[in-house]
Image (tube, rainbow, N blue to C red; front, side, top):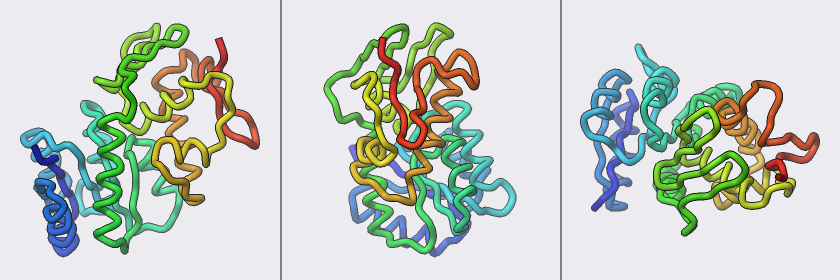
Length: 226
C-alpha cells in the first residue's frame, strides 16, 4: 500500500509541484493551504509523513508541529524560507525529523521523504532493546523509563538506539548524523544537539543532571556504561 503524505503549505505552486513529484514516486498525496485545515486532515487521514511549511499566515508551522507532537510521533519534514539557524533548530526541538530550506529541488524532497520513512520503518531486526532500567520498543517508537513510557519521534529513537547499541563509545555529531540519516552535512550537526535536548527531556530523571546521555565536551555524546 502506498504511503500517504500530507503537505501543509500556503504556497499553492509548491503544493502542486511537490505533490506531482511525490505522486510520480508512488506516494498518495493530500494537501492543505493553512495550518488548522492541515491538523483536521491529519486527524482524518492519518498520514504516514507530513511536509510542513514553517511560515504560514494564521497558525504557523511551529504551532502545527507543537499540536501534532502532543499526540503523535508521525514523521515531520519542515520547509523553511528562513536562513537563520535558530529558526530551524526551534522546529527540530519541537519534534520535526528533518528540514529543507527553500528554494529546494522537488527531487531532494522526494529523497528526504524516502529517507525519513526508512528510519520510521526501522532498519534493524532488533525490535526490543534493554539497557539498565530503559527498554526501547521499536514497534511503537517508545522508550520505557522508571517514570513510565515516553513516545519518541523516529529520529529520536534511531539516535537513542545508536547510542545504546554501544554504551561508553563516544560518538561525534557527524557520526551520529551518518547513523540516523545515512549521510553527514556540516550544517546539520547542530541539529543533533536539538535532538539530544529533546531526548533528555523525555528520558532523564533530572533536568541538567543527565544519567544516561553524557556530553563529551568538544567531541560529542555517549551513552553511559553500566
